[in-house]
Image (tube, rainbow, N blue to C red; front, side, top):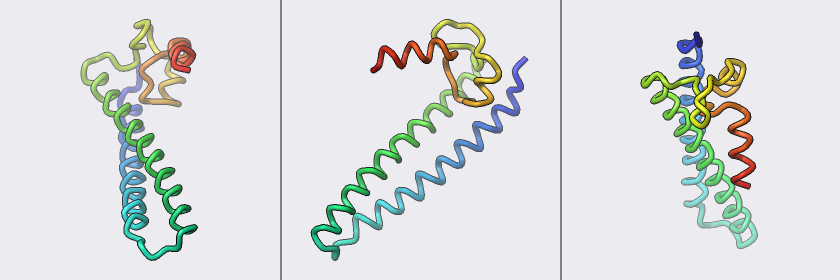
Length: 115
């Protein structure tokens, strides 16, 4: 039996941390976008930084979505079972990646086909 309560706590902590990080990045983006007095070179650096932060923001939002999908799997009783092969996901993988939706072999196969 999976220690779902502990894994759920981990997921909630990760989600809270990601929301905090996203909010901080959005504040920084807003500040950078309103800084209109920088010179041309500084502005180019600012725009590069803004694009980098936006990508990080998207990545963190994707992690939040993965966590939310894990909560749906917990509620439906499918948590801990690979979405691809339907076999149980090893506890060690869930402890390392509580939002994991696939076992390692299926996740690796998915990565190979997406690259």
